[in-house]
Amino acid sequence: MKRLHRDFGKFMLYLIVIPYLVFLLFPFYWATISSLKTNKEMYDLSTNPLWIRERVTFEHYAYLFNRTLFPKWFLNTTVVASLVTVITLSIASLAAYGITRFRFRGRAAFAICVFVAYLIPPTILFIPLYQVLRFLGIIDTIWSLIVAYPTFTVPFCTWLLMGYFKTIPLELEEAALVDGATRLQTLIRVVLPLALPGLMTAAIFAFTLSWSHFLYAVAFISTSPQKPLSAGVVSELVRGDVFYWGSLMGGALLSSAPIVVLYSFMTKYFIKGLTGGATKY
Image 1 (cartoon, rainbow, N blue to C red):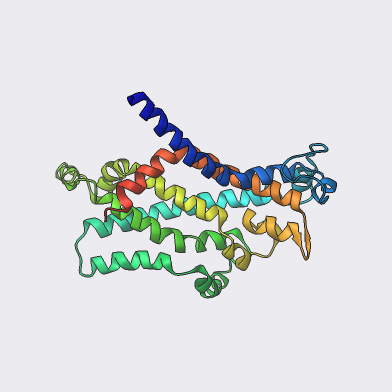
Image 2 (cartoon, rainbow, N blue to C red):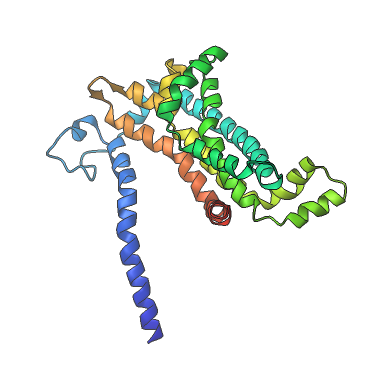
């Protein structure tokens, strides 16, 4: 009887999960099929759009790599996302540690303001940011994105790490201070290793947002060799009312691959970081 109940529970679980997986994975399937079809079959309304009837072709990927600057866009995006992640973790770790460990007037209000800063829409900020970046002389370069992206990654990552630092016993830091460690040494050698799941969660969040952000990339960069993937693929493969659907689908798949790999390997840290810190401040 117990086995029957267990098997029925598994059946109900699969019954719920399988439709969700189909719904979740269908866009990737559609993009894959579209990127491997010939243009003739893609625009033929009499063919079934769910599979390939004639032949598999890689002409759309060849166009993507040979007729566009896709490899350059991919490199630009990798550089921007990596540097923004490093900058975000450096600033957010120091800010979160200072807010959670030091006592000063208005500390709680300042912590709330940090999170509220994340809620400000980028559509409001990109105009004043453009003026700042133009003053710095980095408009139309990837450095404009490296400077601009931390404005929305740092606030949330700071809030996330504040919650995670609160779960670390203060006695461990006091013991390190008694042994002669400075505050910075305590942060680097004691707090950060214990906060690794939270740091990984913040890194995933910062990298993902930096990899896929669109508005700032379009607003601050107009030269094709300086564009990231989010702006390059759309601007170069959509020309007026002409859509290069095969190459667009191929570009979307290749652009999403690093994020899929990142989440596949970091899911354990991501879940632990969110449940362990973000809800406990």
